[in-house]
Length: 181
Length: 193
Image (tube, rainbow over all chains, first blue to last red; front, side, top):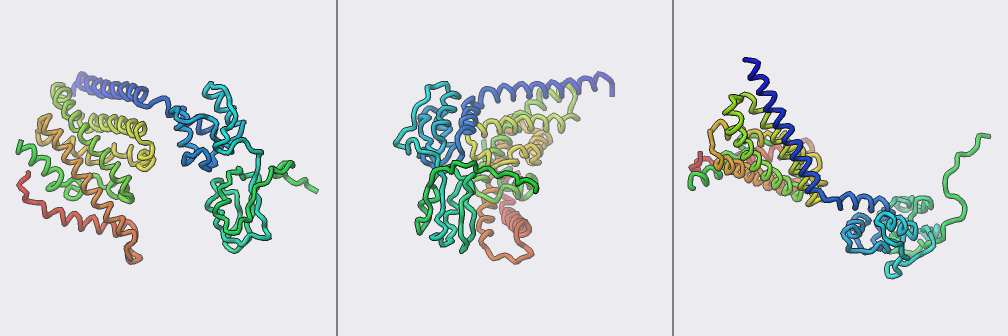
């Protein structure tokens, strides 16, 4: 095989690769709308409680609705004023108070289980979007307050209504390493 | 016209790529657990097969043959198929993120679906024209999709069946695939080549 044929083969393969690369890059920039990354960034600011208080099935659908301009940024009670401020900064819109139709502003609260009345039915466990409830069937349940987002999704499944929302305790809930004696 | 119809029929039923040529078995086993994913995979493969057979034929006819580089065809076709698959992935991600999630790794794996390369090489070997290549590719894609969807519905039923311990999972799926291949033998002699 002559050198020319080898050079030609390399040139053809390289030309094809470059053509495909340029075409794909162009397609990626044209077809993939920028809105997608905007949805990602909005979704990152939402609290990911998937509580549905915004009347969308979860945080990501709500983020998509905000990005598409179909929903205002004031529908997220678990996120509170802080989330609205962050969203307003991201989208360059004036911040606004939470819409009372979706729950309005609430003090930060966490779920609390009345352990005297808990019958250990474990129905609140699958309802919790952040797995903040510890428990097992026929065992008493309790809420990890530091994990709880106060989304209220555990309230409806409880058959004995032993879960209520209480203000976040004033003391820090972070676990501290005990000092060595 | 009759010729083209027979070609498509032959590629999709008589010489079904999965069940009589045993090409493309990886997605056939891998993506046949859920009907939604299988339907998406069938459509994506149909799209890729049709585009790939048309483009690979054009490349063969107007670049490789005039330059005397026929021996490069496997390399060039694989490169082309990879590009088309990547394009398909961009399209699917932009139009249906849910489908993109369902298909997962199997979407980029269409690149290594031997049915796609097989169609491109068979087009060249059988000296199909451009139109014939497109019809052959679409027929092969339709046949792949048909086999995949039928197989998926069977597997969804198998999930609830009382299968002996030793055959659970993939073994019984492979047995089912073999029985389906036998059934597809019934199409032999439909008059297609």
